[in-house]
Length: 339
Image 1: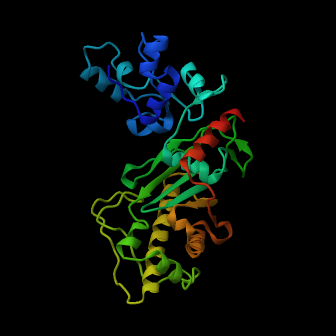
Image 2 (image 1 turned 90 degrees about the vertical axis):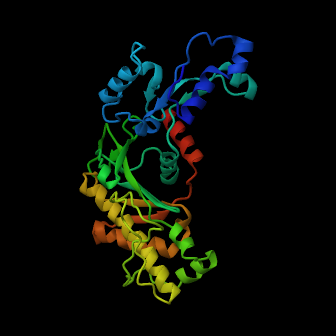
Image 3 (image 1 turned 45 degrees about the vertical axis):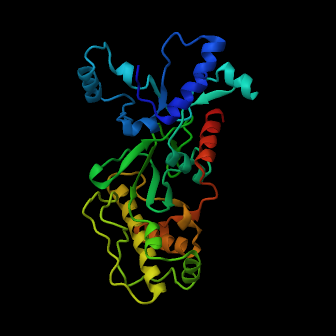
């Protein structure tokens, strides 16, 4: 009687079937086993094949072997249905409609992960242009870009989420053709803003020193600003060591070198996506979120750096995202289904 069930799946199951105790007392409809309904995004790292939209044969064979006493063992362990994020999967149980005064017409739709929901929030819609990217500048650095092609390479920490397409809403603006598939490609580095706290930069110092840095000038320092050994993306290397030397006495110069180092890793990440076959190979716009996105000087520095890898004339615009909350992105995803 045990099944794999992500947190989102568990919430959906209860919204579909009702609260256990209430159902037993008021409706007594739990005579049959509940279905677990999940989505592409939550199931990706569970092993779901997002290219062929099925569970891989090796996983099914493994489950059949380990649970040989059960016929069709996989159906007792894995989610029963895996749907596109945003796809309608059922109606709310009457218990919740009555308890919270909700609409009789309310529907549940397939969910997503928090980072993918943040992508929807940052770009402000569910049908962005291919090449739209989001960089998260938190304690670590993470990038995602909308691509027409699937890319994956564990040695470089790159993977792809299948992006939901609503009635051909994702378009190639260069060719004007609708695409049946879209992929959210990216990875997450261990480099990020955590190193600034490690090096004891205060908020007021960051503001003051950033105003003194010229974002159009390169620092002579070449850093790889990890807080400790180990990197995931753009190259998975458990032995990669932090590089923060030489350390100048001038704190402004030191900050310039660190922010440039993080920017360089971001560019290397986009280069990795392009070299693996992302289409387009470079971003057309980069929305920025996280604490680092508040730094106007850094936005300009990153825009210049990204222009270097894209080509000056085709350089991507780097902007601060107005909304980054996963809850807002989830609302956009749900609304897109019915628009």
